[in-house]
Image: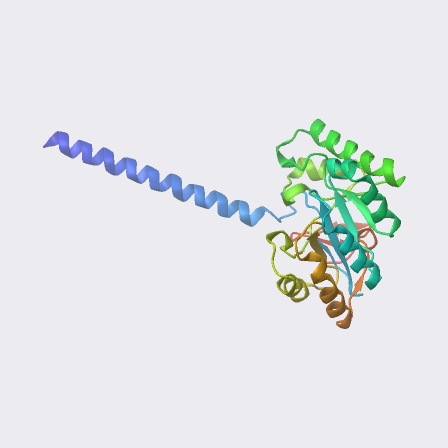
Length: 256
C-alpha cells in the first residue's frame, strides 16, 4: 500500500512539474509577444512613419520569378506611382534586365538580403556579408547606392537591426500587409490594403503575387480618392533626427 501511495505521489509530482513547465512556456511566449515591439529592449525597424500629410508608400518584395512584374510596372506607370522594390541578390543577378526596368521607371530599389534566409540566426559577419553583397548586386546594375533593407520573412533581432543601421541601411518593415502571396483575389487584396492604410503607412506586396497587378488600380484609385499620395519609402521616412516608438512608428525628433 505504501509503495502504491509513493508511486501516486511521484506521478502527481510529475504531472505538476509538467503543468508548470507548460505554463511557463506559455508565459515566456506571452512575455516575448509583449516585448517584441518594445523599444526599451529591442532595436526596431521602421514599420510606418508619423506624418500628417497623407503620404504613404507601396513596396514589392522580389525573390521569386517575374511572371507578373511587367503588369505591375505597367499599372504603376499608368497611375504615375513611384514605388519601392526590395530585391534578393540571386533575383537581381538572375533578372538584371528587370532591375534596369525598375530603376529606369523611377522606382526605388532596396536590398532584401543575399539568400533570403532567417537573418536573426546569422552572426554579425554573416549579416554584413549578406547586406554588402546584395547591395553591390543592385548597385552594379543601377549605379545607385542602396540605403534601404527589408529583412526576409520580417524576421529580425537586435543584432540585425543594429548592424544594418551601422552600415547606413534603414531597416524597413510594413504596417499594411496585402497578403497577396496567399493568392487572394484582386478584390480581397485591395480591400485589405485600403481598409488599413493611414498617413505614413508602408504597404507590403510582392512582385510575383498572382493577383497583385489586378489589385493595384483599385488600390490607387481608392486611396487617392481618400486624399493619399504615394511616394517611395525613401521619401516617406526621416533620414535623420528621428526616434522609433514601441510600435515601430518612426517619428521626427521632438514629437511625443
